[in-house]
Length: 264
Ligand SMILES: [Zn+2]
Image (cartoon, rainbow, N blue to C red; front, side, top):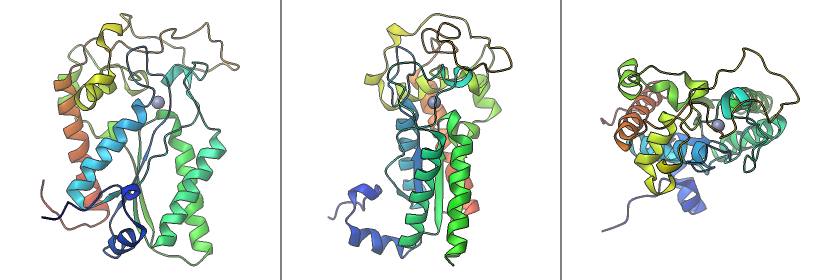
């Protein structure tokens, strides 16, 4: 019996990769960060989650998963605690834009025409969009046609019904969900050995004013790295969320890329 075909591009030989590209698969590019996620969660939280979602989506839609961009744009106080924490290892916006642009144009050079950029770090948003836009502009100028890119943030695929199950006392909003109940639950499901529930800070949600001040004063804002407590995180909530992310993204990719529906 032969082994299943690899889903990770990095595990493939170049000849197998070329052969797979002939069937015009979607390439999934996970994008995350190396960023503090409180005293209880790993620095790679934002990278592990889109890689695992990417692998599960790939299994459903016959996609390939590229090595992740494992560093992100600078952590902001109101969405990630701030860039001053040790361990938070960030890129300038221009670097992230260029990385994205280079990787996408390389995929296109190989013959890929369908790419799903799967982002998980709040601060990456506009730099990824800029990288996508510039890659498409480059390709047009080079006469390369037909590349379609879908960009998604997994947490936007959660339903109201699941939100009220995961946050029975009220949803604090995605910006405050940095190392909170959502990411901690998903990692309790995916990598329980990397989560230290005994170290979850017991603190109320941080209330930031509706503006930013630069330079950032490390004495203001969160001192633990979390913005809302993860005390209510469980592996069961994580499994529910993960399933919903995977199903929602697979369905959206199937529709956007007009893939034959393989069923769940
Ligand atoms: Zn982040």
